[in-house]
Image (cartoon, rainbow, N blue to C red):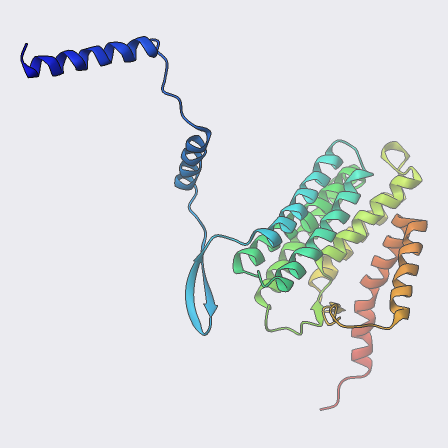
Length: 300
């Protein structure tokens, strides 16, 4: 037998051994890590990575990806707003306003976390604005409509639409004034504060049993007017204190900590009523400040 024939025979025998070891139709085994890499590669091909221009040491450079930590809080706020809508559609008017309040907490954390960790970005700002529109614009209006405004017919959904439209206008104006307006004041009622008023109103009335057929018709009219007025306050040229000037990193007198403890104790007495009263006082503070400015104009 020649040398070529020997090689051919060896090759044939090795193929026969492979067939014996691997049953017909059995696919080769793939490790878990290889499968994960293939899945990640498929996702990357399906969704392009975000690329953003940033300024570093006076130079404009491009960075890929997004910051995780602040956007997690923004996603939490978005989820709470969406869950509030779902809860209202199911008639759960106790969970819906609480979900909006949780969205308010997450919204207050994402910006501060981004500034403290130096992870602020254009993507985060735009994502936060869109999440605010859902959590503090659409969600409160739909919760109010499902709870009381739906029984008023066209007047009810008109009041809800006024609120949603004003929230969108408020956020659009705020985005165009970033870095230009006074950071210590908001021009118009902030959308989280407006959402807090509507959410706490639903929460208080839920505790009183004013839901469904037990809801007084007069209260529905008052709630519609409240919804429209709060919406208009968001776009009014009225200054509201932003509380951004407080230094959270500095030392404060011991009595400040004691005052915070008293505030927490007061809220726990009756959370819906105390929060509603506080949010209404904040809403009224803007027109009062503007009225004082009109009475005492600044000297030239």
